[in-house]
Length: 328
Image (cartoon, rainbow, N blue to C red; front, side, top):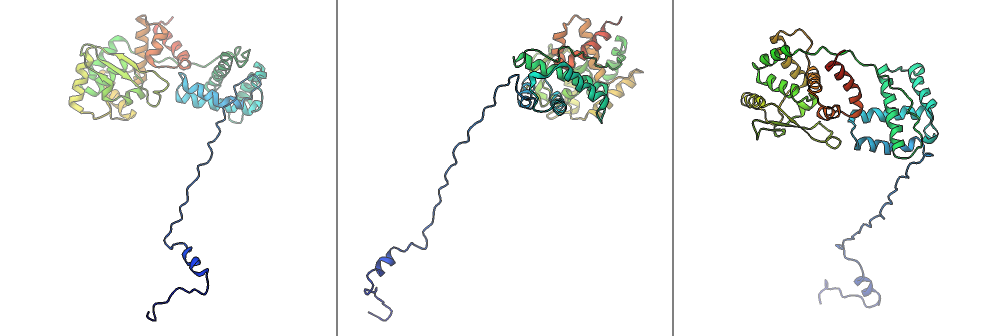
């Protein structure tokens, strides 16, 4: 044994044991995470007549989003609910609200609120009351609807001056010089599309499999969950108009790669070329489509579906279209 070979000491009987039980320098300490217990799902209590106004906010929002209401309408109605809650008190039971309370809120907004809303906004809030308490009544939450007796007096804007048939023919002839304009005018004048729907159209939304009966599928941007797809038929001439447009402009994904301002400029040039002095907009072409449909005998509810309008928007629009189609 050399001087460097040091034997284990035997004077301490525990020395060997102490040496042997020391943990390795390279032994890893593994920590196994323990999953937390699953959270308990809290189910909302069903609404009753004693539920507070605040308790209605989430169920009402869900109702609006699952029914035929635009995103703008949902936002406005929920804002109106918040304003009513501030006036009546968030803890007020919904079954104890009277028509006098609602009229008091509308008068407060109309006369004493620091930011007096326009008459159009007051009318919309009356529409909100009809919608909100009508929903509670239909669900059986309240027995009597306090908004049933509130009259809707929405101020109607002045009627637009629509084009005569000879002016429409002149516009169509002028649009032929630019296939973009011809395609745009056909889609609104013969299918009644909104400007936003025009801008959201993709190439696959137009079906030319039967050239004699072209079809356009309308998807309103951001509202696919709330609105059914509308399939609108177009005259056979649209097939040639569209093919010419595709050959000349080569759109890649969307049918119109333009802003709404661009579309207005495209239409304005054709209107000027046609020598039309009236104010012609994309919305006016949509109005002409609706008026033509009514004069052709289309039922109001069917026309509402074709135009893709909610029931709230249709109340005002139908009155306008009826007066334009059948003036006294």
